[in-house]
Image (cartoon, rainbow, N blue to C red; front, side, top):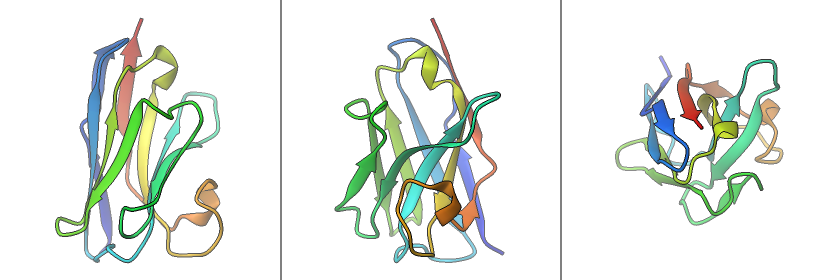
Length: 124
């Protein structure tokens, strides 16, 4: 059974940092692009960042560019999101996802497996 489990969320003050992890089990995802999305209350799920199979290519939403860094360790079947200089508007549930199908990295419709999410709350 394929499972993605996020961890590392929590409450942090504005300007602080958090590191999210996404551990995959039940299948090796070293040949699949992966991504992070987030969803705030009353809003649509939005793209945060994505990473290619090798980790060489990364993609970011404009709102997080320069503050967040996505990475992956294929040997551990794990993906990370290092978040720095956090802002209150970053508050959301963060989801990791695996992309098996074609299409761009930015639409959540193009991802096939999802984690349960981890809450990130940034206080002002």
